[in-house]
Length: 450
Image (cartoon, rainbow, N blue to C red; front, side, top):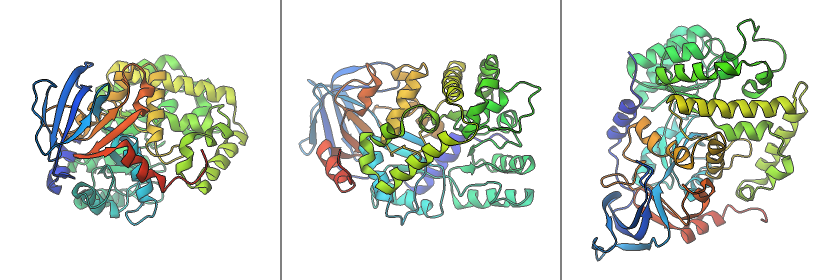
């Protein structure tokens, strides 16, 4: 039985008894609305939000403003749905870093996060976020990783999937190292129970098997390079590098369209995390990465560790910068081919990994999608309407009756994707956070000079 991602996550959310973060009324007055359900712009609108839900959208001259409403001036500004980070690593609920990461996500307009390195504490955290007891985006949970070290045989694989489904996780997370039999057992059990499985493609299984078994998302484009190797390739020996990038010169790119079509036919989505791979292997100097403005919000020890990892990667025996550049080009071509074939793309950057500061890295991922050939509208859809469709949630669109996870910008991101970073304020489940409020929240995490 093939599971429905939307059905499973929708049931999980319904069971939580979702409540709005704030029971108040806010009016965005004279604002330009980017609904994202279509590539349209509604000018001079008033948008009324009450109890965390969009209640009214209409012409500024005809929509009355409730007396108790907090008014937000939308003149020359653009209101769109909040963004989703569909591949994040969320710390334990008791971690001192949790508020840092969640504050950075929200400050960048990220109102939904899918945690892809699950912990038991995330189940209660998911509800505490919805209740407003903890500040942060909506959390979509995956269970603790199933991988070559955590799973010992087929019976154990089936047992762990049943346990995670019973506990109420939204996804099963797949990491490398599983045998083909273990992966099949996980997939079959997940499909029987209706819980989606997502993440890496085990080498022992390969893309074709992952698609056949109905993998919900393939993350990092994992496994696609191996699938594009010539039929007579040994697929072993030598140096493959992260996500097989050093195989780029051996690939048969003419096979990209066929594998993109197969992905679309299988209904499997992709979370490319392209910016992560480009941070790893591009020719951008380490000093330039360290010097990015957003690094000021991360502990210096973390940034130093990232720099050491980057330098170590470039110094590895077998690393070739020309092949790395080719790999980036091929991956971008693959992203565009998946999009053109109708295979779903979801926005995700894998924060906070190598130079990916939570929230900030998602806007860099948007830029890589546009560089891959998507229009700004199409790129933004991967983090808004596509996510709502994939998860079956009531977000992702600015429309009456939708949950009010919103992003107010000072310029139109459809004109230039960089404008997605010009954030005037964020609405998180009905709670309005002005630019000043966001800056105040972030100030405690600023630890270095700009």
